[in-house]
Length: 184
Image 1 (cartoon, rainbow, N blue to C red):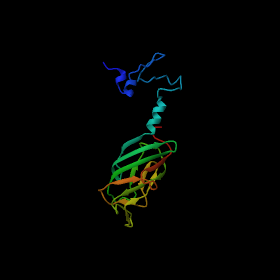
Image 2: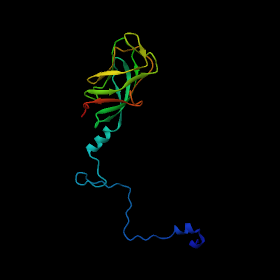
Image 3: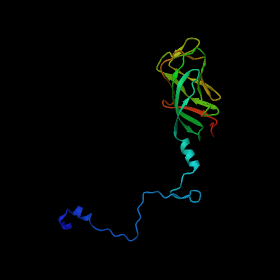
């Protein structure tokens, strides 16, 4: 039999009894109250709370092929208070001599574009061409309603590679400003 006096002092203290003056209850289950009656701690989430979380989350969508792009993947976040979508978009080009082709159709997400901070970029230095033959690896778009097009009679000269859609000012994410969302 071991005596507390024969144990190291730190280990001996762990064996001392604790006295509780009130009944103790231990539980890992949260207490959920009816949020419609009490605004204290441990409220249940309301549908408005869940919608707010959903709207502030990142979403991934495959957009329909257009005249200038195919296999379009858009990762986006809605900033409804400031009325813009922050997006990172990647797609494959579709070669065409059609000037100012439709590049992105956002009719399933927004009702009307109000402005853009967006640039089409590729690693090919001559991907984008104009009717006068000028080439480049980047192109600034224009918009009409909820559709984004290439400007200045620009067209796509190659079918291979990848086009990234990013911001003209912020190197990470494009910004698409809108009047309202389709599902709101």
